Length: 135
Image (cartoon, rainbow, N blue to C red):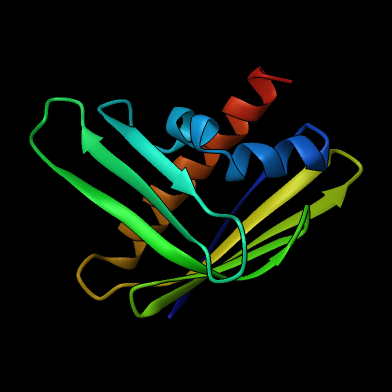
């Protein structure tokens, strides 16, 4: 099953793209709630290149690496990547208000669909706030 989340960002597409693909930015926005943070991030932005973000609870109780391999890149327009046996597509759609960012990903079987959708949407909302605050 595919899940899609999206947000609108009031900023130029080049700035939106850069914030989505730059490790120092990723560390600032990549969390679903205030009690989580991303402690490290690396990006090799090329087809076949990998990315990794270390996500941890701020109280140190839990952490995990979110990692994948880029399978298609169209600068300022599209990122596709695989992570494990799942796939994700990130679209950057320019419109009159800025950029719509749509993320479509394969659901995983361990957690409820609504929980997955809410978590990814919260991260995407943090992304939009980060970009707009730094514009």
